[in-house]
Every structure is written in C-alpha cells, then in structure tokens.
Length: 216
Image 1 (tube, rainbow, N blue to C red):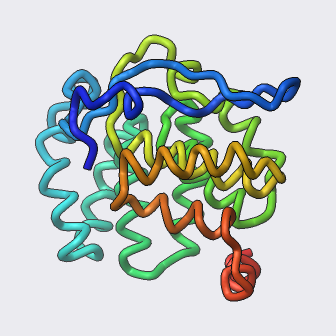
Image 2 (cartoon, one colour):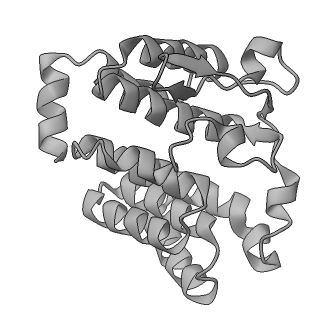
C-alpha cells in the first residue's frame, strides 16, 4: 500500500500522452492509503455510517450485502459509491452479467465519478471498444487534469485509473507509455488487482487472448 507523503516519484501521475511528440506530461499530487474524509462528508449520514460494515459484508456475505445495497440505492439513487459496492458484491457472487449492468448504470447516472469511469472503461477494454476510453476520460489521462480541484487521491483511485490507462495504451500500440504506467503501478500499488488487469493487455499470452475473447 502506498503511504501518504511518499517520495516525489510516487506523488506524480504518469499519464497524459501527447500525440504530437509521444511524450508524457506530469502533474504533482498526493497519493494516500488513508481515507479521504472530504469525500465521505458529502455522503448522506445513513450511507456514511454503513459503508465500513457493507464492505466487510461484501467479503463475508455478498448475497446479504446485495439485498441491503439495492434498498440503499433505491433510497439514495444519487450516491455513486453504492453502485460501486454493488458491482463488487455481484462480482463476489460470480454474477458477471449483473455486475456489467450495474457498472453501466453507474456510469450513466454518475459519469463524473472516478470509479464509475474506471469500471465502465474496463468492460470497454475487454470488449475491444478502445475508442471509447478517451471519451470516458475526456481525453485526460492524468488524474489532476481530470479533477483539477483535487490535490489528493486514494491509492485505489490511482491504481484503478493507471491500470486502465496502461491497458488502453498497450492495446493501441503505445507500448513505451504503457510500460511507464505499469512501472508506476508496481511501485505505488504492488498488491492492486489493477496489475493483473493491465498485464492482460501489456503482456498478452495465448491464454490471455482466449480469456479476453471469452469476456466479450
């Protein structure tokens, strides 16, 4: 896990690809593994109070978590983190169809929410819809450019975003860019599930290619 106030190398995004010269721009921001409190403050109190318990429930009893999350979403349809938790719960039960549907719904309802962008982009990448990725991120492969009012991002936000960007650049033939992003991902979030996702596109084996075809 990344720690707050790491070295400057871990505090930079490695993201915006300039088509002209094939170079990367860097933006400086903090990556932390601590909860980002200002985001939680924007949540309704009943949701804020349940988040930690729901996350544990997803791992231990995802079916029960799904039932509770569906009720919460009905009462708070404008809270994007609930959709994100529901997609994780569906994934835990092996229901990929429902996971895909709720991921797409979250992106439609909350297109500015980072994890809605990331999760939808992952499905687009697996479907081979590479042209949709710049549209999802408004052509900004840099967290600071995407959210200019923020100076701090959680390590899971960095990892998910960087993993998608790495996969996209690898899939579109920009291997040098993809490799640089992959190295930053390994350095900042070595245990992230974004790493095997990015590897599927950066180092595609025959088995991986077959898995990608099966996902489509």
